Image 1 (tube, rainbow, N blue to C red):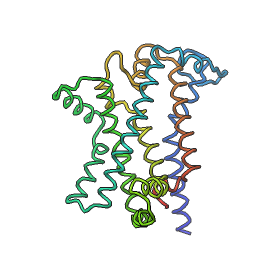
Image 2 (image 1 turned 30 degrees about the horizontal axis):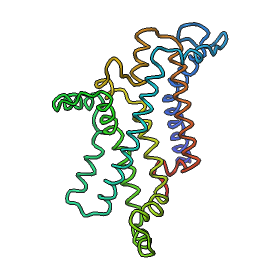
Image 3 (image 1 turned 180 degrees about the vertical axis):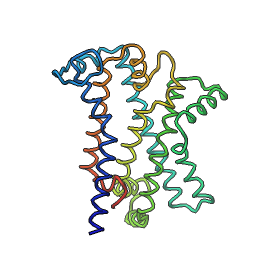
Image 4 (image 1 turned 90 degrees about the vertical axis):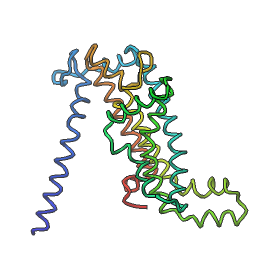
Length: 266
C-alpha cells in the first residue's frame, strides 16, 4: 500500500510540474486569438487577425532569414566539428581526453549573458568586426556543446570494428564512414542537429551583444516589437514558433523515438 501511495504521489508531482511549466505557453497561445489589441484571453470570441499581421511586421522577414541562416550553418559546422572531436576522443588515446570533453561542453555551464560579453570583448580585442560572421562563430560556440555531448555518447557505443571490417572488404576510410558509421549513428546526428538548430534559432543572450542596427535575429527583433508596439501579434508569432518546435520533436520521435532522444535506450 505504501508503495502504491508513493507512486501516486510521484505521478501527481510530475503532472503538477508539467502543468506548471506548460501553463505560460498555453496562456500565450490563447492570447494569440485575442479579439482586442491587447494581450487578452479570447473569452468573448476568437480572432485570427494577429496571425495575418505577422508577415507585415517591420523587419520580420530579414530577421527570420538571418535566424534560419545562422541556425542551419552553425548546426552544419557543429555537426562536422563535434563529430570529428567525438571520434578523436572515443578512438584515440589523447592525454587529458576527459578535460577536452568537458571543455567542449563548457559553454552550457556558463550563463548566456556572460558568454555573450566574453565573445564581444574577444572579438573586439582581435579586431573581428564583421557582424554576420561574428554571429555565426558565436552560434557555433553555442551549438557545438549539444553536438559534442550527443556524438561522444554515440561514439562510445559505436563498434569501430565494423569500420575495420568494411575496410577489409574493400572500402576506403571515407566509404566506410559513409556506408557504416553515418547510418549507424544517424539517430545521434538527428538528435544533435535538432537541439543545436533550436538552440541557435532561439538564442538571445549571446546574439544581443553581437548584432547591429541592420543585422538582427528574430528573437532580438521580437524584443524590439515588445518595446515599440506590444500587441497579440507577438503572441501569434510565439505560438507559431512553438508549433514548429513541437512538429520537429514529433518528427524526430517518429524517426528516432523519444527514448533514444532522452538517452534511455539504444
